[in-house]
Image 1 (tube, rainbow, N blue to C red):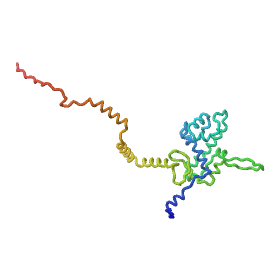
Image 2 (cartoon, rainbow, N blue to C red; image 1 turned 90 degrees about the vertical axis):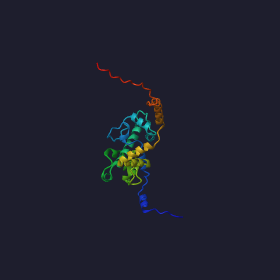
Image 3 (spheres, one colour; image 1 turned 90 degrees about the horizontal axis):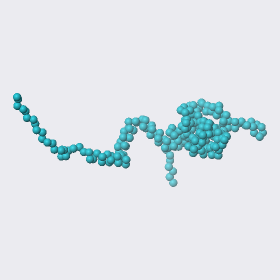
Image 4 (cartoon, rainbow, N blue to C red; image 1 turned 180 degrees about the vertical axis):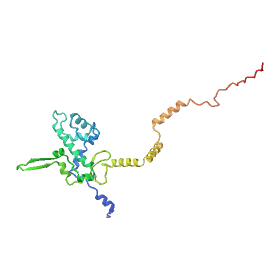
Length: 250
């Protein structure tokens, strides 16, 4: 049996790949239950907050538009007079999205020195209670436990669709191969605009005409067929013009 050896370059490339931590994956899926805050319906330009639980109508409209958000709210009664459970789920989702998106949008140097949690988020993620023996215990949100010891630089926002994803490769900029292909195409067009324009022109000329274009040309041809320029053979005969004779002087 032959064992294929891996080259040094491929070995180093494979060693850089890191699978998504099992504890973190559910929270990434939650964060992608809705688009980025600025892409939500009715979002104000420059407003990056998730406040879609302010009105029941907004929550119901988003649940009807995004199936993933509807699945997240499964079990909550949206028609309840006091939708306490719905507000709790939306607020928890907003906090999770804010933390992961803050990490994804920060520079590597900022991640090393900056504080990722603001005051209101700390209140949501850290709580204290007394155990059965009356001793004080600090309880952390499961997301904080999932982020413990994780390479934060691998939590990123896709350059194309805006989803939060885990970069298995350290140089990965998009969540899927499809988004990566779109990003490469856009960058190529920006670097070579004239060549892209020429390729589009050549491609358009090489493509056959569509059916409606062929039909349009045929209708125009039939309309102009009886209207032909008169040729010399079809031109009516012209009577000879008699030149006027000069009259003798008086």
